[in-house]
Amino acid sequence: MFRDTKAALVFILPAFVFIGLFKIWPIVLSFGESFTFTSITGAKTFVGLENYGYLFTEDPVFWGSVKTTVLYSLMINPLTVAAALGLALLFNRKARYTGFFRTLSFLPSAISMSVVAVVWGIILDPYYGLANSMLRMVGLAPQPFLTSSTQALMCLAAISLWRSAGYWMMFFLAGLQGIPHEIYEAADIDGASGLQKTFRITLPLLTRTTSFVLVANTAFNFLTFAPVYILTKGGPRGSTNLLMYESFKSAFVNLDIGRATAISSILLVIILLIAVVELRLTRASFDY
Image (tube, rainbow, N blue to C red; front, side, top):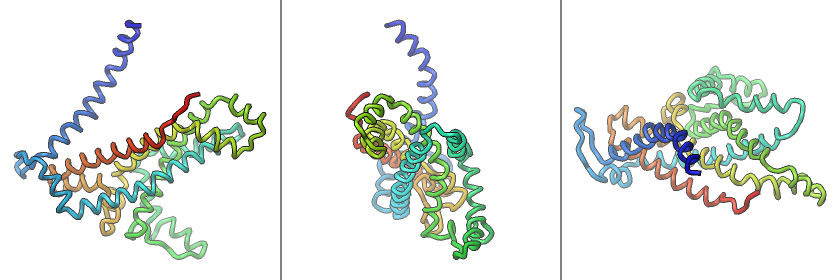
């Protein structure tokens, strides 16, 4: 037993080293930077909680960004989980073209988010884009899409949904195929309908998978940056100014490293708090 434990530690040690170097250490550095003020010459001055105090009490742009990020997450998280689960339920069957449609659904997630943003930017162009051409063909009025303060955030959510649903579908498929067939056979003997099996067997036994997808997808969406940077630059009128983009802008446009790292630290705390709530709400109280 002891020898097995030592062997396991040796195998996972490189993973711990890389996580420590490239995940934990940057977070520690970021927290440290958030308590400093960096002058234009690069000199750092310890200012304690001043950056946080400014953000919470005197920074309307930060609060606008928080509202936009929360609204974006409230839109995209349930949609993505529901779409991924729906696709998994649809393609979790032995049919002739199931493999093809699974691959088709997964393909968008294999494309870089930057490339996805550029392609959708061309499609959603209000003057020459494919989307408005199709709307005109069916007699509907063209839409401003990314140039509208009321539509831009929804467009970003739709782009993220298109790219992510197939990826999370694979986790739900793995969860579905891990449910023992004997449970369904027993339900068949008892005369359960398809809906009854879905709501009383499948969904409850997918709780752990749902919990993982929900938490991971929430973190992913709170950290959305590339489509905002490429497509909208936080506009129009701040309607897509998510926290990650605001942090980037503060660091590399306004050269205010203290404010930028304070925003990143607050974002991390928000994600952790939401993850704890989601894990408690979706905690499985059974085993199989």
